[in-house]
Length: 108
Image 1 (tube, rainbow, N blue to C red):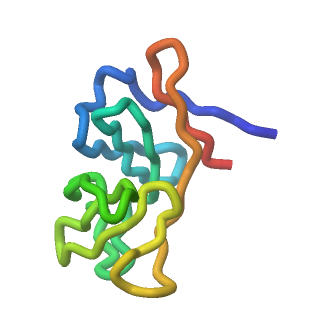
Image 2 (cartoon, rainbow, N blue to C red):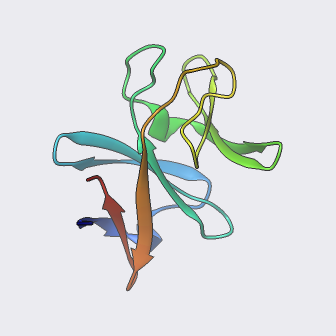
């Protein structure tokens, strides 16, 4: 069963900027791109353990939407969570949607 949790208003997310959200015990990094797409990944940088990915630099690499960690600049694919700079390293990815002007995530 899919359970959606409302985390913020869609308009609260600035394009190409991240925002941190707490859903239960999970810290998420939410991103809204210029084209309106939404992404939700785990907020913890797997290289340092710091909860900072929401403060990362949003961009792209080879047609993939990405975020670069603000600490050591490792780049993560926002769709898959895969680190593009270190094989085998990933961050969790969560379903996210906009519904009636609100951003909802599925963390189940």
